[in-house]
Amino acid sequence: DAGVIQSPRHEVTEMGQEVTLRCKPISGHDYLFWYRQTMMRGLELLIYFNNNVPIDDSGMPEDRFSAKMPNASFSTLKIQPSEPRDSAVYFCASSLRPRAYEQYFGPGTRLTVT
Amino acid sequence: KQEVTQIPAALSVPEGENLVLNCSFTDSAIYNLQWFRQDPGKGLTSLLLIQSSQREQTSGRLNASLDKSSGRSTLYIAASQPGDSATYLCAVWGNNDMRFGAGTRLTVKP
Image 1 (cartoon, chains in turn cyan, orange):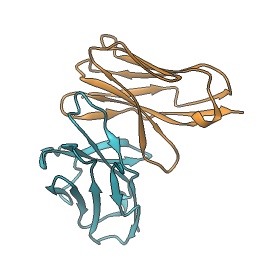
Image 2: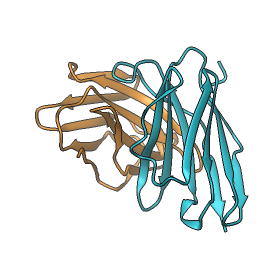
Image 3: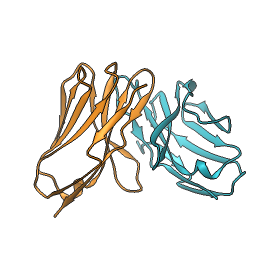
């Protein structure tokens, strides 16, 4: 398996623009997670899905953030409108049951909002 | 709210030394604890996963222990090598979420 795939790897956008980050989980994994990493706050769980259904989105910082998982092999994290404070590295991860199995991370998308 | 702390924040050792990284958590109601490695500008690589019912896990030169009652885990690295230089993070899976420590930045000098 190719592992968790994320695109784009780097994104630079202007404040106010819409940003869409994409993730393809490992085949067979039924849990998908979105994380954000910043120097100030470290790694934070934003939202996670089980069988394409959002389970916990309490980490989503604001209504400007939304995530979808239309099928088992694809998820998006959208920020609209983007702000400079959204600049961070966004990671996607997947696993089998997270209580019992490891999470596998993608390479991340480095987002810069100017 | 679960809080995860890693000490020290940074560590520098000469090649060949054995070393211990520490992780503590405030809520012992966890399902598992996972150690990761992160290289600069890269994603996280899973090293070891310890279930709450387990005391330790081993993989090669790495050994992780878990004392759930005291809220502590250690990652032991034997015979350190320059290639071990990275940031090591611990994370706990508790009540439907994953909480990460801030990491320990390890430098192994040749």
